[in-house]
Image (cartoon, rainbow, N blue to C red):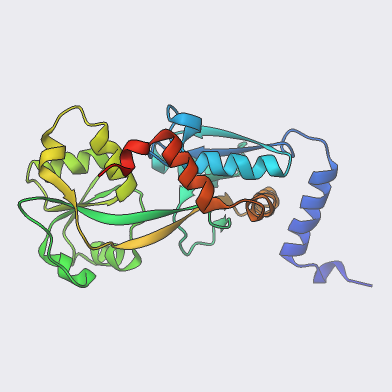
Length: 259
């Protein structure tokens, strides 16, 4: 007979998940997550609330569940998801990183992370440490790359933090910083939706990509979080994520693919 003392944490979580499936409760039917304004991946006013939200909603629908997303500034979205006493079981879309606080889902998409520069002042670099000669803009609370974040933390990389990507683009255009770290699809969206031509005329994406990063849902480390992660992963297994993403982008943002 299996002793209760030998039951693993995962075993307890799996048992909770089984009981939750059997229980016809609200939490068994609707997953509540927090997110942010990050076009074209997530946004309250975007078509279907953004590409990442569309994909997660489709995956949950395969499993017979629904998705509810509330939008907040990024740091608050993370804090609310970490607090297990409220109704939220995670936040997204997020890059995967080492943490004991969250359980990451299977990949829900891809983010091409790059650098924005002025057309008259391109960033010349072969390895990330070459960027130390430039001043860069980052967004507060965002994960970048491990190497870049380490250099920012130890002071070898000059970086200024803002609360939104568009602020960094304006600072680059105004020559207040040399470059900005940003997802390149987000850059194209902001460029297309800019209220003026200054950004379009002066900015471009650096030819070298920092990293092609995966996107995930970060579930809080709880029995409910594990149940929802496993449920979502099963749904994702039944979808062609890349094809769904391409269809969404071409259906809603075809202009981003125009030369």
